[in-house]
Image 1 (cartoon, rainbow, N blue to C red):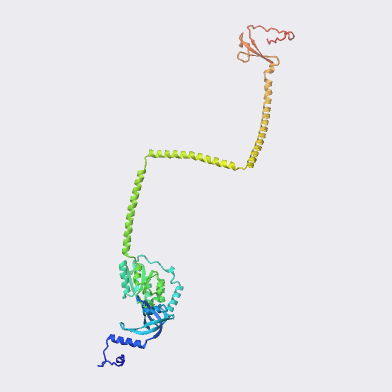
Image 2 (spheres, rainbow, N blue to C red):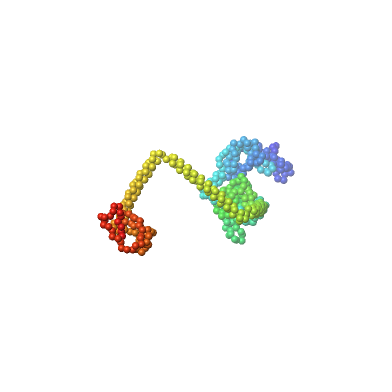
Length: 480
């Protein structure tokens, strides 16, 4: 009888039915599965792919209706010609076995072949391209996160570990007012609830009873691609893109990517990381403020000391008015001396430049200039001679008439008619006889010369003169 015969023939309540422990039954099922499905080929889409630290690969093979767990041991994983990824449609070869520890059956994959892109991943890629074409994933749409939000709105399941991780991390970093909008994070109706929560937070009034958040976090724990499908729906992606409040998406683990990640303002690898992005560390802020305060105090103290030292130095440098005046006088003398030297140097430099310029003059040019100057000088001399001659003629003409008048009025014309002029001892002409005393010496001026004479004392009539024909030779005629 085979090991499976008692199981097939066992009847409820029969006294001769053997009893099995759970382990015995699990091992018999394991051997039965392995004997029946010792080598199979299964086509399906990879989902929930994970690579353990040991090097083993864990994933699921799925189609439209069923899911099969699969494992690929490290030795076989190194020989695979395909690098497994979520959404990849493959054909796996291996054996079926069971895992008694969880009463689950699974496939041990030995080989893997690429069968084509999975239908689900193809749908997501098509949806991603469509939304990207509408500009919902554009970088210019993304807004900066507030540095220190007063209120944070969290869209997640109220019963999972995600909200506890977020609250715990916020409390550690910077305690903040948190408003949770409870939603389903997978299954039917989850996408509608998430989209409604995002829109609901945005519709809250600024100063209402429920405060409007400054930042939103949409969070969910890890899971398979099917578990995260709610965050790939268009309604959720459009709500995230239209949110006026900055939004952080924290869906799944670090390797999980959903379409809401592309529409959000910031993607966090995990919900805990989203809490770290949302607020700074309060202790770091306090220590930073304290450090800045300390630096400010030290800086102000150092500045005050420097200003005081500078002021003291200026005070020591001040001098009396007499010393200032002496310094100004000394500076004036120095500048005067420099001015004299500068003038001398300037004149010497100008003279040197002049000599250099004169030396550079060509002889022919110099001769032409000298000839030109000589010609101009001769022309000026001729004009000057003509002007002098004309002036002389004009002056002679002007003197000719007065000379004739003077000649006509001259007393010498009277002398030419036989008269004479007597000059007294003082050289003046004597007009009256009473002005001459006897014995006075006089000078008698006649037409042809002068003769000295002396006045005697007689006052009689003049003697008659001898006729001219009777005078002796050499004897002058007398006037009286």
